[in-house]
Length: 190
Image (cartoon, rainbow, N blue to C red; front, side):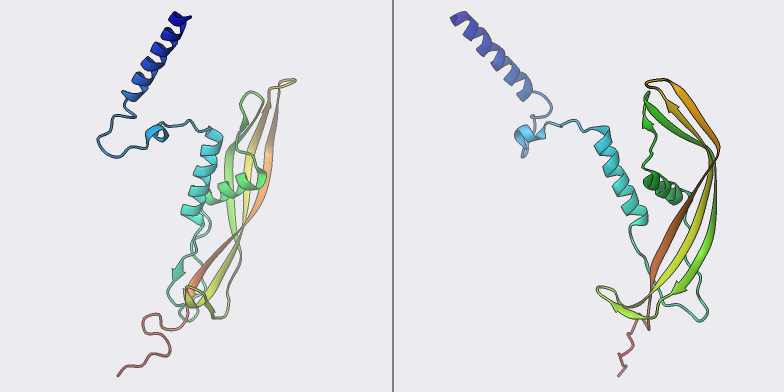
C-alpha cells in the first residue's frame, strides 16, 4: 500500500516537473501560468472567425469620398469576383460540404455583372460624419457554373448539373461629403 502511494506520488512529481520545465513555463518575465498552455480549436470555428474578419476587412466598411462635381454620378468599381463568390456561398450556405458524405464542387465559373441602379440621395447630416450624401449602386450578378454533387452515403452517387445558374444582387453604398469639406459652409475668413 505504501509502495503504491509512493509510486503515484513519484509519478505526479515527475509529471509536474516535466510540465514546469517545458518551453511553456520557462519565461523570465511575467507568466500566465496554466493559461499559457495552448488549447486546440476546431477548424470549423476557426473558419467562421476567418470569414468574419475577411468580410469586415474587405466589404464591411463604407468609404467617405470627396464632394461630387456636377454630373458626377458614377459609382465606385463594380463588385469583384471574390465579393460575388462570398455572397453566393453565404446565400446558399454551401462551402464544400462534408468529405465522403456530401461534397459540392463548382467548376467552369463565369460571372456577368450588370448595373441596375445608380443614384445619390439628397444631402443630410449623418452622426459622426457630418453633412454628406449617400451614393447607391445596385448590381445584378449572374453566375454560370457546372455543379457536381458527390453523395457518399447511404448509396454513393454523383449528380452533375452542367447548366447551373445563380443570380445575386449586390448593393454598393458609399458617402460623398456635402458642401466644402475643408472650410465648412458657415466658416468665414477674417
